[in-house]
Length: 300
Image (tube, rainbow, N blue to C red; front, side):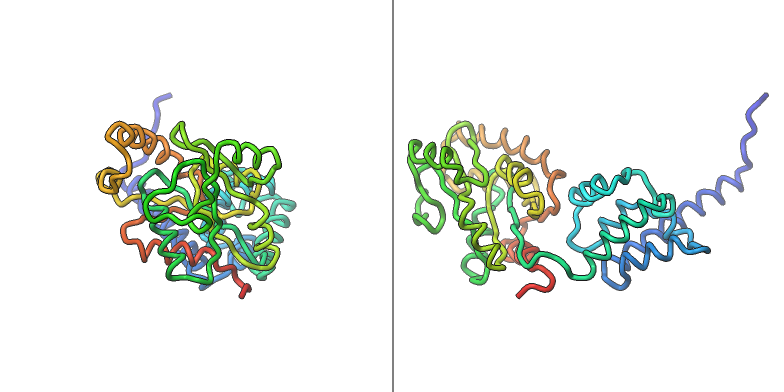
């Protein structure tokens, strides 16, 4: 039997309807993102007897990522914990899935959140992680910055105990053996960096949020050890700007610069593993965005 194609007018109408549907769903997400409407209200509307098309056909992951401070990586983890497939739409959830999702969102929106959080700042070499964290240290004294231990030598201007704890390879090995690191890694196939965990646990137990600036390998370890940590990926405005920054700081010879740029290409490919992405086009602006993520609703 020959295939019957719909008339052009039907195809045009279908395309227009699809565009209208996307706009309607985008409008719903915008109201949640701007806190003009709660995510629970969207759920209740979608599951009403006469559910509006936009709410019911919105994908669950789209609703979750519309919630302020909930990034795509964390949303995916939540859906996995709740047993909801990534392709599921709000209106297509079963009774048990609806109950679990509503309870999770309601608890989050009720303000029953931890009083502190660990924010992890990572990114490719020369993107300016150190510059941003230094700006935060100097301009936001209320922010607690974790101090890492490293086996590399101090750079000009770096202060022991403020920027890093500079330790020998033997000392680093001893700290590993004692289980003192939240994470540790070998960076650029040479030096090792690690984050002492006891000071972080103590600060968070006291209700303080902590900022941790580390490399991407370390960030992955933190995600395994503390899934509740907020991971932030710092991006350069452009690749050319990243190259300019690396060469301009003059702390590596040409061979080391070339090796680090190759590493940076691999590191940039990891950005989608993170909860948030911040472009470091201007240091003060990037620092402000990081500090905002350290503020937990309901904390002081």
